Length: 219
Image (cartoon, rainbow, N blue to C red; front, side, top):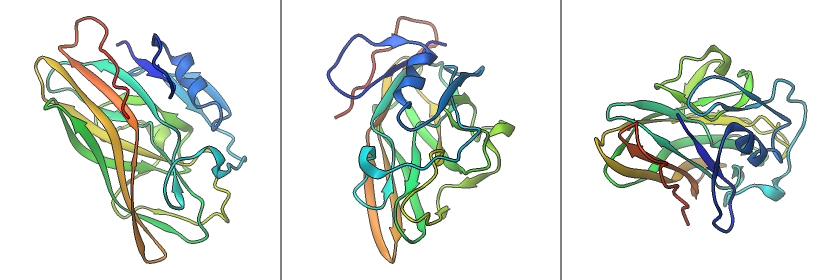
């Protein structure tokens, strides 16, 4: 399976491979390693003693995530996979409760089948994409439903590992290209409701065999 990742900014020739995926997250994560799966990029954070600041995070309220990222895959109809690009950080001084996580989809070829969150009990900070949903990898630790998940307050300095959102997607197209353009995250904080839309793109082309799938650049 070939996967292409990109960095936000002007369009350029995309290059496949796990190393680039790790470099995209260098500002947030201490190291990278390679594991089998869909696109082998895995950001390692076995030692998560560091803290992050909000200066390079996106989000309108105290809940923040990483800057826009994206990649492209080819799948046959019926395939189910889990995307894990979205990491959450609570920069507030009170707990945050997620109320909804929604993939914003373009085209008719993808269907969201669920969303989970992996907390600090996971081995790696990020597993970029894995087969199936919910993922059964023991290294992810215990998984919780995204709806109702609580991010504790950490005095405005959350741990680098963050909380990983795992979004399940099913391919329902036999041929063609569809995309996820954004991830919509609704949450409450101190009795107030927030809604953010973050650009985290996935392009999926079908069938599995074929030329490189054109990436989705988002907004």
